Image 1 (cartoon, helix red, strand yellow):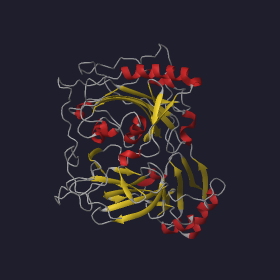
Image 2: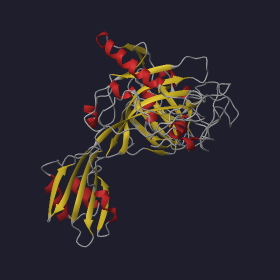
Image 3: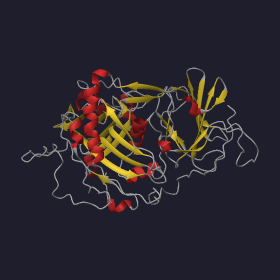
Length: 485
């Protein structure tokens, strides 16, 4: 995830590392240094960093230990002309059947099961578990095998003198602390990408700002400073383990910046066992955390293009026709998440609403997601989904004039405004943890202050950033036909 400043054009980005490392105990693995980037002063000029030391470095400190050498992986045999690589997913079938589908003979399948049996029970597999096989082209014998239950839970068997010897891999998991500041352009998702972030940061950012601000309010000219922690496996990016602090300054320059902080901070010792989420909450400087009643915006990076309106003039039919939902403008392929947990009622072509998923929730509620380009894997009628689970991707199917998500909610068969589903409340940092929170906030404030930001013009607006041909603007008009389901 390089931060090539020259390639960012009008979107200037800085990445620095300061006292950020001091806000949590040292992780039990080597911490990879963040990518190099030159800090900017108030005028936007790059400052030399060749001889600069970290703010809290002390003369004579030992350099961080280098990461261990990478472990052998089956994929590294791709250049070996004597073997054939086969990848597969277990799916909803027995493991031996999955191997048979992958072209592994019965005898070789039993060799694999026998080798792995004392380490991993292959009679109880998850549908998403994957496997990778290297077979000798001449004999069909398995020379190497991997079973992958998660990025950090990998079992491997290798042929040693005709016998498959298995073990669980000890993979090197490292934490990388990144500090980035940038000005939002015409499309938030494009701005995050141009700032050097990997996929997944938008959802983490939405988690951090939830209740404090909405991603849909981050208009062009808004300024962001982000402190985040990446998880890297054998040097390769896996996910964002945490967004540690965010400073958000709205495009209106007279508005004061908002800062939120992740507390309790990430526990590195629990990181390898944490598959998808981290503990803690996001509090403002007063130690307050607004929260909602379980409903979330299904496309975190999208802007609202059309709101719930029972007296809307239809943009194509030119008659008064209720707009029974909210339109979220986003490029084709943008992920769509379930707004709340429930059970899939329908998933398929609905006519004017195009590819649509409907989810039944408790309390007589039904949510609908229209115009999808495609559905997420495993989304089918009767399937249970969790809040923020991926269910599909933004598209333009059905009666629509541009890529967007039409999101609607019914209560007992009657359409209601989806944006009215958020039930507000406030939590506060417990008194017993207030001193720890204040200490952590002071250090994170120091790190946020150290992040330079590119200057804005006299009008408070940055130069325009090209968000790509699929981006929709605030005045985009979509043609949505009310759902008849």
